[in-house]
Amino acid sequence: MPTIRFLTPADYADMCAIIDKHSSGPGAWCNDKAAPAAQNFRQLAKDHVDLCFGEAMSNFWGYFDDAGKLVAWTLFIRWQDSDNITIRLLIEHPDANLPRADGAVWSDAAVDLVNWGIGYFWTEGVSFFWSRIYAGREANHVSDQPNCMLGQYQKAAVLAVGKGALPPPEYRRVSWSPVDYDTTICKFTDPLPLAQYLEDQNAQTGNAQ
Image (cartoon, rainbow, N blue to C red; front, side):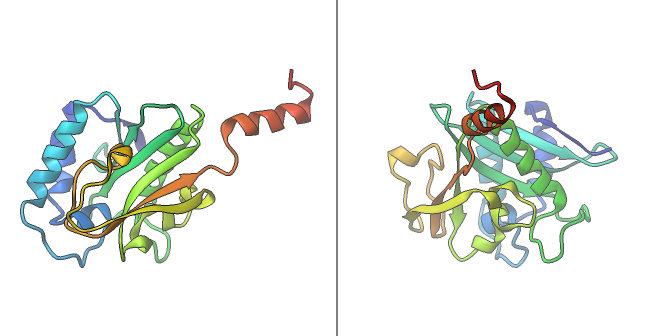
């Protein structure tokens, strides 16, 4: 049966094999098959993954199909507090024929993977998720897909980052490098944080104290 688990450097080759199936940032991270190829995308993406494996704040998860093959992976990055997490990367194998909802850009596997990560951090009390979204491709972001838990969060566009511009220091946990496209840093706020949920549930059962 399909499996989701933490990825380690031992999975790096399989992760890179999926990167090799794409030719640009929008093609990989937006799952936009019509995006034009970008020079050096594959090597830069692999170097980025290698760099993040060396960072203690990085959390990679992978989705493995029935045959045990890695078909999608994602990267969540912790901030230096307990309230904020960045959904940094999401990518899927374009030739894996993964099921998806009607009209969905991302497969059910990719959405399940992101939902699993959101649920994992929600149980730690994380209230805010962040992402850098390509301008003009907002509908390609996983938050806009059917059944994605981010659709239940309150989305706010926080900062527009122009093509080639470096995000300011206070947003380096969202993204720390320039990209060759206009982007927007977005914040997703949990309408019912864990602490409030537990308080509400305890109040109903009389176990609030």
